[in-house]
Image 1 (tube, rainbow, N blue to C red):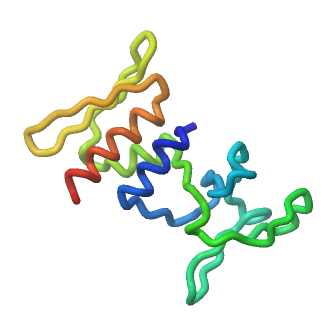
Image 2 (image 1 turned 135 degrees about the vertical axis):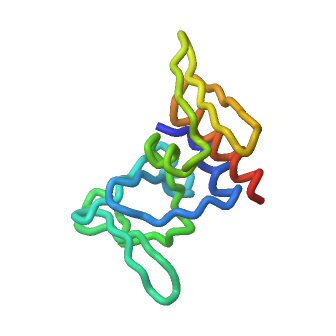
Length: 134
């Protein structure tokens, strides 16, 4: 799973989350720091209102939560979602002995991003791509 630090960096770089079933997220509250939630039509579903999107907690009696605003949630994108964000720039993912290397190509420039976790290697590549597009 992507690190919280890189998820925050992606959000701060302007990555916009459109919640869908299976997405994972954390709440930006210290008491929920270790908890990861999953969007699911049965228990946590995104609801759109004129004032914004909320994540509604349906029937989760173990939490004293009815809903949270989308801006109070931190999206933890999966490996496949990060790869999709790279679109045509993505070239490869290689596994080495103790790390993963993501290679992207933008124009004539080839860049690699290395991290022990593949999701974090993808996140580093997405951050670089977002910086180029800014």
